[in-house]
Image: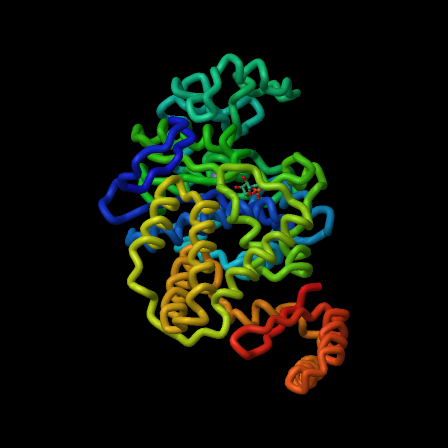
Length: 459
Ligand code: AMP
Ligand code: ZN
């Protein structure tokens, strides 16, 4: 039975979908004003594994991940660059799509953009005004009236009065309460704007997710996710808006990914301590970056460091090494490994344990490789199959192991290996060792097994 940790109840719960066999999931998507950083990537990679696993377990998953394509940050960026906000949106949406594809993130079934949902957003705000959960402030903006929604603070597990005293004292005097948040913001001259009953303006950030998620997945759906920073206020506000508008429970399970940290601090644009996915992909193969992101449990923090990427590279190399030079075969009819893998993943998507099982399997492959290559090939197929659930190990092993070797003179390496084999056949050990050392100086490491010599590039 799949168990998922629910941030709302703060415990692992047995997962029972609302409609048998079907899972509706919404993950808050990126705000497209810049390249995505690896912290963003971590959250989306975590949910990518969730989606892959749910599908592998036979659920029909509808995955919605929006694009926030209107926001202060986008407008500011457009003003800085003296360009249209749509140009900023298009450029970074394309860039993010490229980066996400490189990381092997599956495309969502729907990728709604806030600006395409303005009519739905307006109608939700109208409902909230009508039923007394929102008001038009003196400056003409529309605000959500937090005090009218009794369960407010439930997801963040904070008392509303404590939240209130913690809320920044803003210069904003139009709000009835410091926790109230904007639903519709009137446009300043020169800002992008849409018509509404309250004048030309644009939606607030929180309402867009309430409108898009309920529109695509229904008023009540299974899973809603994002990084931990979205718990408060974004997701708290989404609950307040959606439940006040529909009078129905909004979401069954709230899932939140832990932070990718750098020197123990959350990687973020505002702190300036970030590396873009794009830049990191120049340094490491995409699969290494993905492995780094998913090898820890999704709720735990991960630390960004070069060392961590090197560990990821060497772990993946060991797994690929097990897959190397074996014929195509059907996966062995195994119950033990697959069962353990499922047990780990059923326990709130415990990827570290799932990966440790892949390692056990890889050791078994290496043990059977010599004496029972047929068995080894079947085990390798199983390893590849389980790897696919995590979105890893689908590359050609030799290609992966030789990645980054494009600048090497492969012909020269092969001829040196041939010369060394000849020297060994001639029992000219000094010459064989000399050639091995010459290759090592090029970071090419030889492995002799079953009468053949293979090589790895380990810079
Ligand atoms: P944003 O574009 O800032 O709305 O962020 C997109 C997603 O990335 C959200 O789900 C955030 O919670 C998540 N996120 C941002 N920074 C980090 C981080 N350092 N570690 C993990 N997730 C993050
Ligand atoms: Zn959202």
